[in-house]
Length: 238
Image (tube, rainbow, N blue to C red):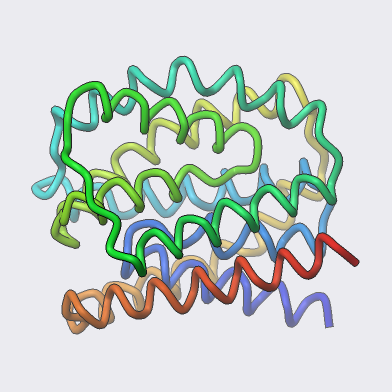
């Protein structure tokens, strides 16, 4: 049963990440926490997300906004150390609860068509928050998704810029996690075993991306976020 869940989680999250640019960590981390210890789940997510980012970066580089990307990276320098401190201090149930509340709050704001203007200071703040969430819970996506959706960023630019940022943030976060939280054989063996599923997801996700229009893209995003947030919230209370 655990093996079946593992296959479904990795395959579905890989497809979502490739077709939307943000979905792997949001979907995979909560459910991997059901199968693995927190450090293991987060490090596996970081490793596999890094592989996806490396595999896709050449295809999306023309869609990257390098100005925003630079400010995200600078801002994350403040958030990364804050995140690892949070991770070292918080217990598993509180960690699940925090993740679920972040996802649900994000989804509600998106459904209510939250709007904001893009700006340099906001870019730095979003990068900082994303960095903190990456080292603490392995999920840089929520602040980026909310920010880009709130500024009506087109799906190609959203996917390209977030994937480029992920390439940086996942690598740095993984190094920080291994140094401060340690690692073990389970993380690396399970990650290698998941690679074939990731590559299948990459292929399927690319096909879907070409066929998803902007409206379907948004609806699909809301459904995935609501399901993940509600499920994890219930799990954190059990």
